[in-house]
Image (cartoon, rainbow, N blue to C red; front, top):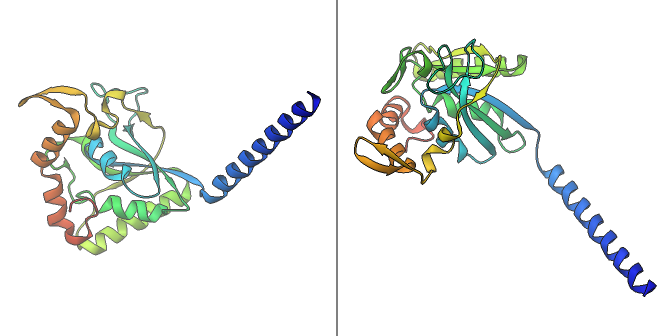
Length: 216
């Protein structure tokens, strides 16, 4: 009986050691995580674009840039619609994220984005620290050089990020039913219709051509 107990303890120890080594390997393989907050008009669209990018861990819709705390979709005066992008810096760089973002919007439009008009839909890059500020400045400068036009995308310090309601997260792929002008549809179908009707991809493709990463 004592022999069986010793064997079980040895087996459990071996399993724990194997799990520890596996976790070490996973941690070593993953690069440092970083977060960037960007405003590119409708946050559903920006979230949809970046969740499929290799190296991106998460994209969360929310609000930033305003003075009020705990803003909601119905009451977010002064805030931008934004997306917080969390990424593995060992797989994709901050500069690559910003490069893709700038070419997924119309950074020359100071009145909003596409069919969505007003301050909440303007474009902006939020920074947390000097490194992110410098990267944002370089991304805006590069976009201006590529387009040969004035870029109006603002570069702002991040004072806080407020996630939007659960209803808005992963809207583009949700099977939940919502009532639209065309009748009941899944959120995914409603989103697809909205994005096309808003002209986002057509405008971005016309502006950026083959450099547009998500408007194919």
